[in-house]
Length: 293
Image 1 (tube, rainbow, N blue to C red):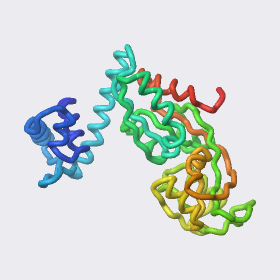
Image 2 (image 1 turned 90 degrees about the vertical axis):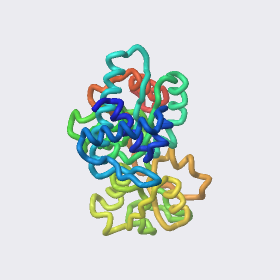
Image 3 (image 1 turned 45 degrees about the vertical axis):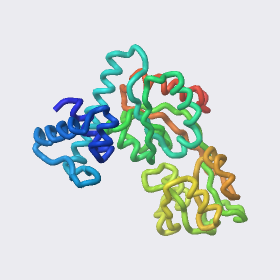
Image 4 (image 1 turned 180 degrees about the vertical axis):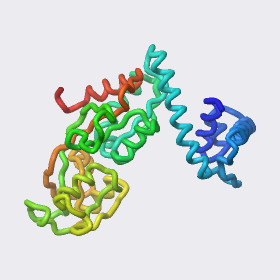
């Protein structure tokens, strides 16, 4: 088993086919097929379920992919650390949806212009899932919201660098009366992302006083802030999101806003992780940070 075989395996898994993987790798399909067969023989299990249209991972293949990702990512990190002449290679960045929408377009463009030899792989997920991906070495860094000084993390689990201060606002349907407490809210449904989202957690705590959300509100899980905003504008739900995102969506329809709290977005990484690509990425984000050091 070598790094080249693991890279071929990962590409086939992502592309779900030999032909597409071969095109991406710049290899002939027969070579890719042979390398996968050799890897399965070496491991002693089938990694893929094969049919005429695509190749899907077996249960064993799913497990093996997790280890292959860790090995390949660690090897890439090692190459960048021992030869730090200039930023290069791949930087795997995870982020909350809100940060991608409202904070990252400008610094990502600037970074790509300054360091064209770095490939940024950007993925989005709620904070909890991003922390899991960081610790499993599936990503290199993440923009997450961890309230109250990382109280839900063991000390030293991650290095964090505060970058953006977000004002969270409660969105109410148009024409909703002013509110002072959660009991004043008329719609009894909250539009939110799946569990793991910090903003959802804070919304539930504010709405229930740290009680059970199910006793007070139904939760309508949605996949985007656009859907969240639209549900609120239509009058069926309430929602909570950063003001920086709200400002991008006012064209969808009218809503009422009620300020709640501020939460910092931090750049998180594993302790000691410091490749040239990551170092320059952090510096680029600092140029657009709204938190005074």
